[in-house]
Length: 494
Image (tube, rainbow, N blue to C red; front, side, top):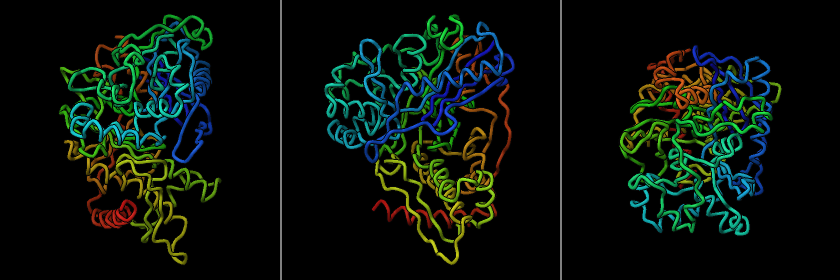
């Protein structure tokens, strides 16, 4: 029996097919091969056409089915991972009304701040575990205020993964985990966040049917099965935002366990069983994939918007002909602290960890007669790691103290320098695994369909590829460089 995983990112859509019995990935593909287009009509805005996700999903799925040569009837179920916090609106015909306002769009930050003040900080935090912030509900309020004719057409709102599931099954649905990431779930009442809906002027009727994260959520429609080359017996049985799903893919399900990613944005995600929150909402608490009111499992999420995107920008600036491996080698040839260069990586919109400020990315300490490419490249990677450290110190106040960090061996975690610096400055051991979001979603599908009896069974074949221990001998050098970085950050946010 086989399981499919779809990972709907903002850069690309990835599809993986695994053998359910062995857990081995039989085929994997992503599209587009260059980064997917993000439209920014104004500074701080970011939109994508949902149909673009569907188009690239079909291309990647075609590759996977061709390469694997499996019979469609053998594919048990599909799991979906998706970029968090995006807003998709559909009318009564289930047609998309406008492009999706995606995760890194910061236009609604002020709207969220006003609601936070109006509803009361303590009231919001104790019920929603977050400020309304720049999340999905606030984005919808922006549409209501600025595009009322479009808002009037709204039948249902969804997150990006809900949209893909709807395309497959024809059923608009969502989950508690998804609603919590949009700041639309009241943890005290275990129901929709009526107080925020009333403040924003939304009817709860715009929220689709709520289904469990792990469950048979629908069968593929016949016309869609024909379009995709799949069988109508295949089910959709799991969906989750990319960061809860990344934690799942690393078997991070229990209190005290921590997962990390560092793609376009960077995330540290810790699991807790305590209802705790950051008073300033700089790190955010959401329902984890295995959350229930009776057995709370909460994901405390630190998100840094500007991580891998800074590294990609550096690649373009130093020359398109250089590979990431060559960049990593160059960066590693420079000393810790990059001979005084510091880079703030906050150039990809408003940063939650900075109280929703959009401070931009800055470079300081550059001396034209001293510094070379390697110093700039190292300073970029150090700046990304130091932003992680800054946020992880905030996370400690919510009970998340990183001793071991699990990550897939991908993106920035492919860089030995990045891994060693993160271990060195945090004191945490880094464990790298042979998994990614699409493989995790496939395993999640197996849990949701009942193919696996438990998560333990689903992850029995998860392989640890590498362990990186902190180098105690370099700790003071890392700390000195980090303190210099914090001084520059202080200047930027004052």
